[in-house]
Image 1 (cartoon, rainbow over the protein chains, first blue to last red):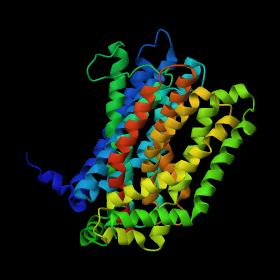
Image 2 (cartoon, each protein chain N blue to C red):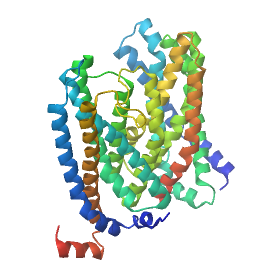
Image 3 (cartoon, helix red, strand yellow):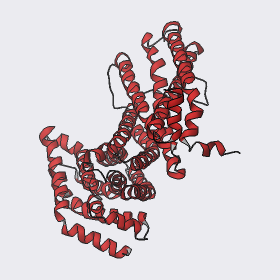
Image 4 (cartoon, each protein chain N blue to C red):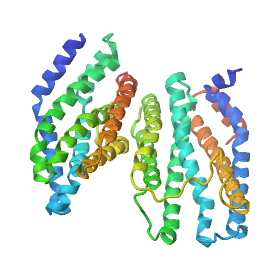
Length: 248
Length: 220
C-alpha cells in the first residue's frame, strides 16, 4: 500500500491546500441533509405506538450521541498519531475537534433529558449510558481546559495528545464500570450486524440524519483546522502568499 | 545518580517534609467528617454509606497529594537532571510513585480503623475496605501522576488536575464501593477486587511512559 498520503498529512501547507475546497461542500451537504432528515423524521415518519410523538427526539438525540463518541475516538487516534509520528496536523485536529465533541455530548445529554421526562418520568437517572456520556463531557472539558491553560505551544500539543490517548484507553473501562450500575436505557438503535427493530419509515430518516451529521461535523472540523493552521503558521511565506493573493 | 540513591533521596525528602503527608491526612479526616454532619448521622445510613464516603474522601485526598508531586522537582531543576541522567525516565517516575504511594497509603491505612469505627462500618467489610485500598490506590496514584506531570509548569495547576483526572477515577470508586457493598450483603466480592487489580496493572503499563512524555515536554 502506498503511504505517501499519510506522511504528507504531516505538512500543514499540504493539508490546507487539499482541504480548502472540501470544507464548504461537506458542510452544505450535511446541513441540507440534516434539514431534510429532520423534516422527514419530525413530520412524515409515523408516530410510535407506545411513546407517541415524543420518540421523534431520537432524530436529534441518536446522531448527536453517536458523534459524541466517535469524536472522542478520533481524538484518541489523533493523539496516538502525534505521539508516534509527531505529525503537526494531529494537535491541530484535536484542538479543532474537542469543543465540537463537547457540544455534541452536551446536546445528547440535554435532548436525552427532555425525552426522559415524558417517557421515564424524570429528567435524569444515574443510568449507565447517561453517566458515561456525562463523563465523556467531563473528559472533553478537561482537554479543552488543558489546551487553554498551557501557553507553550509545544507543551500544549504534547499534553492534549497524552490526555486524549489516556482517555481513549480509559473510556471502555469507564463505560463498562458504569454498566455495572443499574441500567434503564434501551440498547443501541443501530448496530452494524443486525437490522434495526423499527420499521424502515422510522429508521431511514434517522440514518439520513446520522450520516449528514457526520458530514456537517467534518466540514466544521476542516474549517476550524484551516483557521488554526493559518494562526499557527502565520510566519511562513505560503500563508502570506495565500492571504495576499486570495484574501480570506 | 543511581536508582537506589534516587529512591533513598525520595524517601528522605518525604521524611523531611512530613507536614505534606500530615496535611493530606488531616484533609482526608475532615472530608470524611463532613458526611455525617452534612447528610445524616444515623448509624443505619452511615453503615451502608461508609465505604463510599471513605473512598470519595480518599480519592480527593490522594489527588491533593499527587497533584503537587513534581512541583518542587520542577522548580529546583531536578526534573531536568532526571531527563539527562541517562537513567530510564519511566523507571525513575515509577520509583517516585512507589515512594509516594507508600508514604501516603500507610498512614491512611493506619487511621482507617478509627474512621470505620466512627462511620459504623460493619466489621465484616472492614478488611474488604482495606483490600480495595491496597489494590485500587496504585491505579489512582499512577493515573494522577500523568495529570501532575502535564500541569507541572503551571503555577496554579491544582484545579486543572482535578478537572483532568477525576473522571478517570470513576471506575476505581465504582468497583471499590461495589466490593464493599457485596461484602456487606454476604456476596462474593473477589470479582470486583480482581477488576481493581486489573486496573492497577493496566495503569502500571501505561502511566510511567505517558508521564515520561509529559515530563520531557515540560522540562525542556
